[in-house]
Each structure stands twice: as C-alpha cells, then as structure tokens.
Length: 187
Image (cartoon, rainbow, N blue to C red; front, side, top):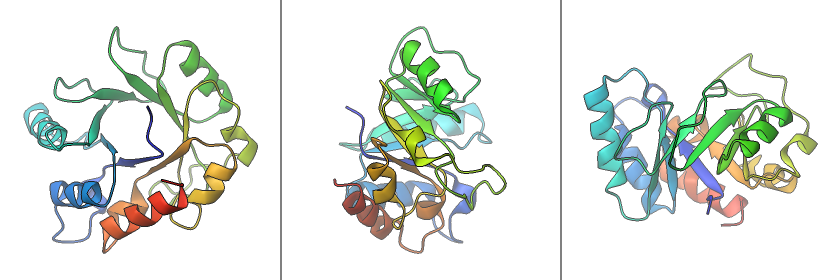
C-alpha cells in the first residue's frame, strides 16, 4: 500500500541546528509512514548509514532516491531512470504521459510535479492542471508546492496523496507540519 503522505529529505533546507535523523524521527512520531532519502551529495557509506538508521524505525518505510540501497524498502527513481530488475519502486514524473509509462513498466507509485509553484525548486513549472493528477492506473503523489494549505486540494483533484519536501524540511516544527498534512490528506 502507498501512504497518503511521503516525505522527501533535503538536509540543506533544515533550520540551523536541526539534524535530519532527528527531524525524520519526530515526523515518524507524528504519524509519517514513508520517507524518500535523497541526500545525493553524501558518499556511499554515509548515505547507506543514514538509510539503515531510518529503516530501523518501526512503521517507517524508507525509499532510497536514485541509488539502490540494501537497507531501503524500495527505490524512487528519477524521471530518466530505467526500472530496476527487481524490488519495489516508484518514479518521479512531470507529465501524465510519463505516469502511464511508469505504470506500464511496473511502478508501484509515482510522484507527479509540479502541483503548484515550489520554493524548493523555483522556476520548475508551470503547475500542472488539477486534472493531470486523476485517473491513473498507479497511485500518484502530488509533489511541488504542496503544504498544509494545498494538500486537501491535491487529494480532491484525484491524487492518491502528496509528497512533500520543503514545507517540512524548512519548518520550525516539522512534526506539526506532518500532523497537519496527515489531517488534510484524510489520514
């Protein structure tokens, strides 16, 4: 099952003095069920240690971004990446046609972006029309510009759920934001 809320990490957006592991643990305590570990700048051993640490948290599904990791529960691919030979995977998509391709290739989920203007990735857009998020054969998570004020509308447009990075990573109280997102997505 694909959760209604998935957090994407980016420790460069965390408030000064806030650690990534602490942030994710607090979010998990608030009800977060899935996280995509990005952190592409870490060397392989540090990134694996991070994935393994988070994967040890009961009830938290940890997905590795772009790079397979034996400690992860799955793999989240970039739009241009080919599916792995085995295992559970999803893909970043930027158009409804890409969602159809990912579904045909066996994706268990996709993120579709941008839902709205994004402070994390300014200039990426324009936002896709709401109808782009509905009617797909695979669960679609709306990504890009999603926060507590837009999450319910994304679900209302037909998205299975939402994927969020900046709204949580930049928050003074990430767990509170996660609780609000869960409430707004019907969890």
